[in-house]
Length: 510
Ligand code: AMP
Ligand code: ZN
Image 1 (cartoon, rainbow, N blue to C red):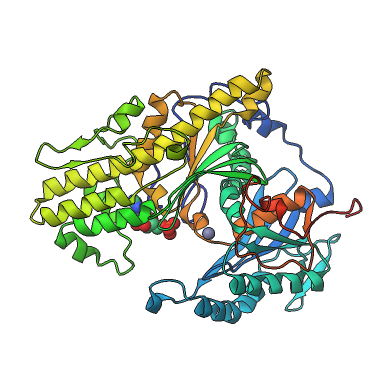
Image 2 (spheres, rainbow, N blue to C red; image 1 turned 120 degrees about the vertical axis):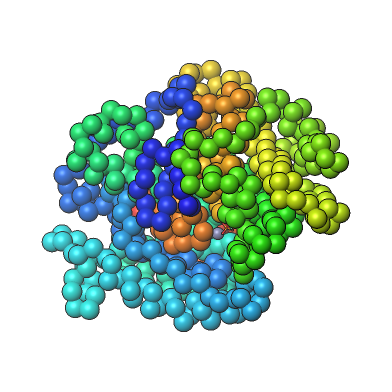
């Protein structure tokens, strides 16, 4: 992610968790983190607590071979000791070739695990140890590995390695869900931020009691909404608890990132396209800079987007009239916002309109192309935000009807929205979502975005998911098989994450 929008913290290499909230939350849940919880945090004197839990994690569901080592202490603060990825070369195939990816996994996984072992913390007196090149290291408390969904042979490569390590080290196996891991990633980021918050606290006494600076870990709290917007996904997910993630809206055809890339190829002037020379076909960043020149380098609040958010649903679906003989119709504008529309993202129609328009007006000047680029993004991003607003309104209504107890109501309401995936780095998207939330009565909602390095496939998120499942008492049988499909919604066929066979509860002695 190139730059921050409104950042209250910068902490992770290669990107940051950004936070943006328009005003303090109307009602914080009773256990919402705050500076005072930071001060109250116990210091955990015992050896086990101080050492925390340690896991080695493996991810091989697609074309990335990934290994991570993650530690988490009893206060919820995490440290990432190792997180590396090797991606197989599929350029010749125009997509992932399963066999090429499997060969890459078998070639790279064992050496990557070996490298990761060197990053294990040094052994202390009490812990169980491993010898790595003759020197004593802490042995992981359990092994985390992706079980599904994904390509079966690819998953099996990692699963076999994970089982082997668990057997050799005599530790539990946690065979976890890849999509659950994506959904939980913001909580990993919160836990990693906790480490920095502690450093801040030690080095800077003014950090105490300063609002967001005291929100280090165990966040976002459930429930939260995630908008996953990438080259392959457009998905709105409601995460209610560790194992309960409902897909609220999805795209039946092309993803928003794919649509923006296709529109950019048509709208960007030839000299911009050739200067960019994007062999990967990913034009998102250059398209954004073309539409809003200078916005990339502007401080988050300084850029004037000249954008007025739609105050009502009717305004959202208004046709954009350029005043120069062409118009753009917003996605699904003829559908009322019923259940079917609220659960659908549709970008093929908008893409079709842009393609047709550019074929008809191939000689469009640069100023008009910029107008079209802005209009395309505005309609696409308002479409994304409209389903978010609908979900929040439903959430609000449900909370008011179903829960009389004020305390429980505070806990049940969504307080955080996570924007993740490549398109989430678009500053105008964040601006549109923020403005729409504000004008529709959700100014208290916090927007966060994990750094892109943790939004793409990685093993750190698998380690974190293993960690949360382990702490909740779940263990995986050593006989578990890879799952090509594995929904994360407990209401889906098969019962979601816990519906898969092979889960068992940790014995009380463990
Ligand atoms: P991912 O699939 O998560 O790796 O994200 C890649 C997608 O994000 C591609 O479609 C990119 O064009 C898109 N993308 C990256 N940066 C931006 C941006 N600033 N604006 C819009 N799209 C972007
Ligand atoms: Zn993924």
